[in-house]
Amino acid sequence: MLKARGSKKATQFTESVIREMTRLAQEFDAVNLSQGFPDFSTHQVLKDAACAAIQGDINQYPITWGAENLRQAISRDFSKRYGVAVDETQVTVCCGSTEAMLSTLLAVLDPGDEVVIFEPYYENYGPDSIISGAVPRFVRLREPDWTFDRADLEAAFNNNTRAIIINTPNNPTGKVFTTEELQFIARLCMKWDVLAITDEIYEHIIYDGHKHVPMASIDGMADRTITINGLSKTFSVTGWRVGWAIAPADLAGPIRKMHDFLTVGAPAPLQEAGVTALAMPESYYTEMAAGYARRRKMMCDILERHGFKFNPPQGAYYVMTDIAHFGFDSDIEFATYLVKEVGVAVVPGSSFFNDRKAGRTKVRFVYSKRDETMREADKRLAKLATLKRSLAR
Ligand SMILES: Cc1ncc(COP(=O)(O)O)c(C=O)c1O
Image (cartoon, rainbow, N blue to C red; front, side, top):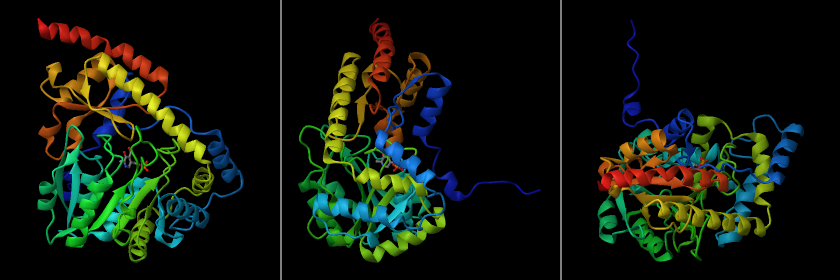
């Protein structure tokens, strides 16, 4: 009888902890502050555009690398916003930025190539590197401002390094990379002939006057940067699964090939609605960012009230908090207690680190949530006070 077994690759990483926390939240009827999706509606104009596209019979396979009008809208927006000249031939529309990242890594990495990843990192990057046969090299971002040590980063580059993954604004830390930091990374990329793959999905969610600087806009980097982005976060449509990669002309072909054989194409009517999304006036972005600034304050106030320690995020919509003083053995224990006993789901910090120990005293909260969701979490977290009192006894 055939003995069923998974591939060696499949044994090298676990199920997504973030998505598992969402399942636990449902099981224990907990307030879900784990997975990064909004629990509020997207804009009515976008819902109407998606419905109109379906009614208008845009329901068959799209052009594999993306509907032409969407690719034009993406390249126009990027060029106009950041002054980097790109055209639609450089764009591949994928099933979310998740697939754009994987198609890109598969397109540019060979087995044994090394890819530098900052940690803590968005958890997909580890498995993505393994799937593409590459060897991840992790460089630590350090608190309070989650910057990297320049010597650590220099030491991570060598003749086998093929790419570095940067995520700014960053999940889970909320860090926004500065121009100086990006210039330093750029110098290393040029010295070692390395590609920069930048996940900029939170580009418009940014606070306190911090500015999003795309790696492709740094001198000398346009020809060696692949910019990953998507509709999910900016337009509150994480279920639509529309994302993209903007690549130098020579690399767009290999990315398109990988994308074609992975998924054929992203949902056709939702690509059409994406054209409407990218035509929203600037006031849309300003109001969206202001909404998140308000939610950030609300979440930070709640966390402070319940004794969490953290540095407020500069961008994106997560707070990485320290939990050492709550007296649990690990982040997993604390997160399990929180979801089962308190009724609030968060993500254990260790899932963002290759060196799991480094995240043992951390959990991540998300605040892309309605006020009433956060108020309910606030109420439930009051239970932590009894825990602290019993710890003190
Ligand atoms: C940094 C980062 N990149 C990518 C994604 C996934 O984006 P998409 O919905 O476009 O696949 C997320 C989702 O949380 C994220 O935080």
